Length: 589
Ligand code: ATP
Ligand code: MG
Image 1 (cartoon, rainbow, N blue to C red):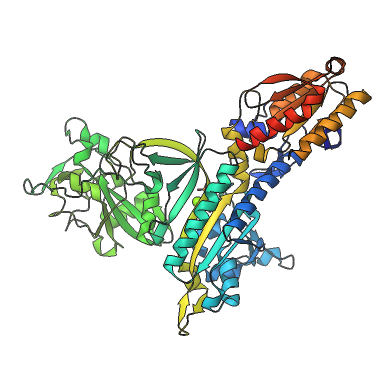
Image 2: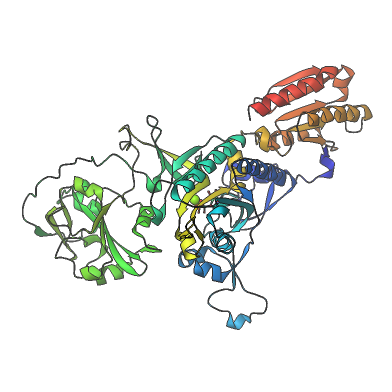
């Protein structure tokens, strides 16, 4: 039993100005963490206890689903990253480490080391060196470790930090089918883990980047403060991160209308937006316009064509296979196509820089336009009667638009709904991208060599801690689920100087500990109001109040935080009742 007077729980009455969302305020107010710098936090004893419990649940679920724990280095030799497939894309997010011997005046452009934002490069190099035969497979490694990412905008405390704790796992299998089985086991482990954390969550389809395929899912905790948008359907159960959401907007058997007439250029002085062209005097509705965007992929320009009323979902450009993608600047655009961004079009024969383009990619939904209007690649002019097949110079159709709520579910046609969520975990079938780069090959029974098929699996451990608080709190404070509460029971001594009360507290505390609870004894010399408020703020699931007056009447008080219930219990019945409440709360997670 831990004594309050011997620990360090600096609770705060006021909300610190730096905290914008409830869970961040409560992390600080309940004395769980303190900020050391932007996106950099220290865990204090209570915060660390909750964190360790989350880690323990995570280990239990992963171990029981066939994964094994390792601990990889946090400092990574940069050569490993350079051998891997994403050095250019990832270098910005990494903190560089130069050895003390480096002369600051001659610091190399590339660092000697980087701090690990994630560990595919390290583990794949290890697997390449250590695993040779199909007999050594499958292997599924994980670790729980501090990660470093130079987030541009760290915010909301542990939610988006620059230094944070992640569980990351990496699996190696002999085949695609075997990798899918491992993926499935990890999905089960994740469901078990988040359930045991007391979270309400859902698993949604997630972006797969260049890999494509359907084996990428995120675990999402619904919350207004989340950074992610989820589109879902109550009817079919379809749920997807908006970054890759599909919809049934374009019917599979769509009949594209015939061309309506000859291509015709017309003056549109001052028109530079979709809205301008839909207004007087032109009155071309946004869904009858083609919108043309210029992007740069690994240094080469390409075009994306959408309906005028649609927005690009930038993440979907990941399917095009570029490592790095950015919007072109206005000067690059006019140099390429001869017009400002407001007057562009992808009309065949009207693009001066056509041969320099890496490609022209069109969203499927422009087929709905059929005949439309677009920029003439000449400032102040547009062209109409542009038929989607006859006139647009499209290399490839795909899904690039951002799906809007209300659009038909791709599975059942009912309207999709939109919700905000926090991404707490991600599972991803990687394929052989890393194993090929690092020559992580195995030999089969006929001594033929194959790349190992990999999966990777992440859980934001520290983000999960905060997500629990975001989901489980009220105006008084945190309401910890049993499994992750730093202490499950607090014993509030109203008269800490009273030897009899202390003796009763120790007896009851012992009984609670036998029932599986961690017990904190509030033996501080403080007013009852202060102790009660702190107990509510920190959110221990059970509070036992022991006072001289109650004891004289032979009773103690038992409170439960989640429902505010309070009962007076005879002293001799208190241990049993306490155990009963504890096991009830344990069952309810
Ligand atoms: P996000 O989209 O939120 O930036 P991510 O997709 O880049 O996250 P992953 O690389 O998939 O993150 O990392 C695995 C998990 O680590 C995420 O699901 C998330 O829970 C957690 N995580 C990622 N970045 C941070 C961060 N800056 N602070 C705290 N947790 C993070
Ligand atoms: Mg992710």
